[in-house]
Amino acid sequence: MIWNVVSDSSCDLQMSAFTSDRVRFETVPLRIQVGDREFIDNDTLVVPDLLDAMASEKSASSTACPSPAAFAKAFEAADCTICFTISSSLSGTYNAAVMARDMVLEEHPEKKICVIDSKSTAGAIVLLIRRAKMLMEADENGDFEGICNQLRIYQAALRTCFTLECYDNLIKNGRMRPLVGNLLKTLGIHIIADATPQGTIHVADKARGEAKTYKALTALMRSSKDCTGSEVVISHCENLSGALKLKQQILEDLPVKSVEILSCRGLTSFYAMQKGLILGF
Ligand code: X90
Image (cartoon, rainbow, N blue to C red; front, side, top):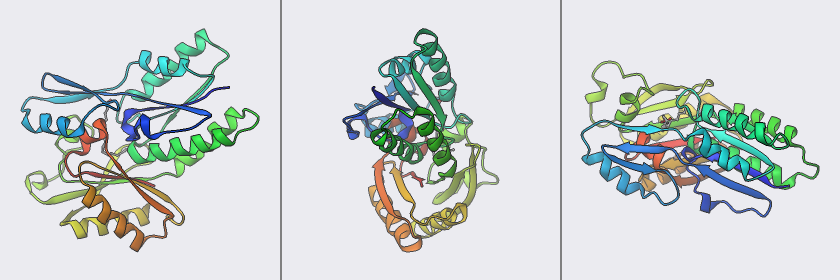
């Protein structure tokens, strides 16, 4: 039996970063339109090129979710698939994956396909992918439903916090409510935000300066759940030094188990923009 983990490209895990003897992994790319240039968010996308194009483009930029056909192709490649998507409150990706599941099951009723809405993106999806891989590798009697249920429970326990210096793309594309007052025009303000349990964006706080920002983030993490033993994944948009400082702050403030740092791929880079930091835990 071939086990299959599929995710959209907002997970920030490159296909090349996944190895397993028993489990296949595929990311289905979202597309990013910057002026008249289209970027496909696959392993070959060069994030600095995307950010350069964004910086020099004045006209509207946007993103588009994968087609059901693209998900269907990924689902057809195996017997048992578990698919994770970006929050259905932010994107049509989840719906596309559900349509693909129905299409594939109609032709291949023997296949098993489960689509899980991460209600998040980035690191939270990476943690789900890793947990799925672990459960699939340890599986001895093909307990597909049991594994899906464990992953649904894990999804509900995961949290996401993030800090951004630029949030134009989130607001212009209607994914975040415009901020009150003249905050938007104030340079040097970092927003501190998190994902609601429904998978929408909630701006919790704002901070000025790096040190205060990281403190505010660990405070938000602490208030969102008991982080004892948590695995944390930080995705950064061209901000390794910030990610390292944030990692240090997390290790000082919270009893987490581990903190891993990944680079944002295209989709999360487009929205988190230069220096954005996203935490899944
Ligand atoms: O369908 C599409 O075109 C994709 C739309 C994606 C919109 C938002 C992506 C935001 C990613 C900021 C971190 C947000 C974490 C919040 C999770 C609820 C970058």
